Each structure stands twice: as structure tokens, then as C-alpha cells.
Length: 381
Image 1: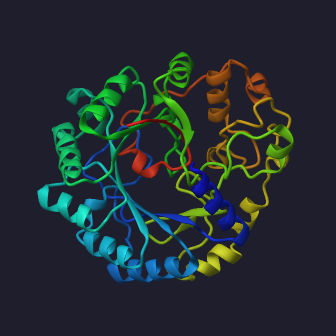
Image 2: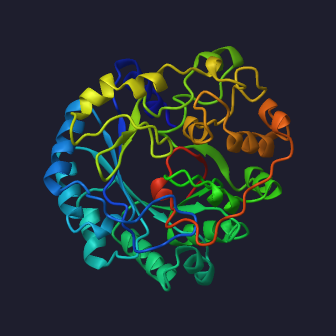
């Protein structure tokens, strides 16, 4: 995070301003990725007027950064109407998509609207591997074509590469492909549970030795995403204990297509619904958000005395899905082990980990368009 963004985040934290909001416009998708956490049926998405009203509320609350995601956002016929309205309200808008539906006119419209960046899910440099993950034949070709069209129009593009058993050996080639296209690259080695609580999908996570290879790869620069990472980087132990686990619920939050508000897309703690309560009322007075904000590193059970306390990327959302938002996140403990070779007290207590096998057909589309509180390894363009 840059010095300016760090300062901005610190001021937003002090003033209680929701600096960044991710809004999923739909859970519908034209892909069915094997690692997805979503139900792709439409259970009553917010209408265009509802979304515009919400955007007015977000602007009034001080939100600066708006992430529009899904599902696949281009399945909303009103997408450009929403983006245009958001830009008129002066939001910095980031789009997350698989780019399958992007054609020349859409790429130009995105550029003309001044969208800050477009993040595209890409799983392999090999079409057969990418298409096997998305379960959409021809998706690789369409995704690459969409990325090329965006770059031709001067749009900043980021390839988001989720690693799993299917593609763990491909990330270097995907990174090279990104460089050749003038596209930025990020790799995420974390698979997370489905929204309905199904954890069998975690069987797709890469093996510990593969995770260690990713974290120690000198071509990748370790980084945390700006709006879900702690407000500051690795701290001295005394400072770390007084710090916040992450910005979820502090300067950032997530709103589902149905108006449900959560601390983060990775932190499915119900905190209110914007269809029946004003956004600012939820942000300021939600009991769930207040509980999240009350947590400091010193209070984290099993974390306050851990040797990784000053540098751990612990995600409270992952800990919540494991049963205790104040406890350790086993997956983050595994990342720390891969990075340092030193097991946390939590891992020592659990003993050798055994991962569940994925259920047949488990998951739908899981892409980084929906994953916002995990560790990223961001590489330079």
C-alpha cells in the first residue's frame, strides 16, 4: 500500500468512514468454476433504482472506492447504466469479471467511463486447463480476447490467478502471459468455503509443499490487497497486539446482490440489509459490525502469543468460517508455516493436517471476483 493510501486509510479508520465497498451485482454467472463459493440462482437481485439509491447512500457516507463484482457482472443488462451513475458520483470504480462477454464496444465504453481497473479471472495459460476449471468451453479464448480489447483501449487490467490442484504448476506461465499482454498479475493460493457452509471444496487447496514454493518464489512480491489487509504492514510485536486484524468492517464492507451487508465478502457475518435499513445506519449501529470492530490482535485466542503475530496475514473471515472469529485461521497458519518454516501454536495443537476431499461437482464459479480477504502475491507488470 502506498504512503498516500496508508494515510487515507488511517484517517478513514479514525473517522469511521467506509472507504471502500464491494457490491456484487449478481450471483448469476456464465461459468461454473469448480472452486466457486456461490449459488448462481437469482433470488431477487436489487433493481436498478435500488442500486442507484444505494450508490447515493454510499457517496453520502464517504465511500471513495467502489468494486463491482459478481457472479458475472456483464449478465446485468443495466451494468453500464450503473457504472455511469457511479462515475457521476465520483467513485473510483473497479470491475471484476471473467471478460468472456467483452467485445469492442464494451471495452471502449469501459475506457470512456474512466474505470480505474478491470480484474479478470484467469486460471492457466493452457486453454484446456482454464476451460476445465470454468466448465465453459472456449472461455479461455474469450477471456484473453476481452483482456486484449481492454488493453487496446488503455484500460488497466489485472489477471487474478487462483491456484488449486488443477493449475498449481501453471502460475509462472500465466505471469509471463500477463507480461506479454501488458497486464498486471496476482496469484491467490487460497480456496475458501462456500457461502452455504460447505467446506468440502477446501480439498482443492494446493499441497503444503506447493504452497511453500509459491510463497518463496522470488518472482512474486508478497503483498496484501489494499482494502482487506491490516491498515499497516508488519509491526513490532507490541504495536501488532494493539492493531486491528484487517479492515473488514472498519474501513471496508461488502453488499450482496440482495442487499445483505457483511464485513467482507470473505467474512459472511450478517450485519444488516440495505433494502430495509439505510446504509449509514447499518455502518454506524450494527451490533455485528461493532463486535467485529471490538477485536484487536491482543484478544485473538491463540494468536496473541504466536511468533507470527507481527506479520501474520490472519483473515477474521476465514476464522469465522472455521467457527470463531476471535480464533486463529488454520489456513493462514498454514501460509505462515509455508513462508517461514515455523509452525504456529494452532498448527502444533492440531497436529498433521488432513484436508477433506472435494465432493463430486462441488462448487460453482469461484473466482477472485468474489474473494476479497485473502493473501495475494502481487507481481509487477
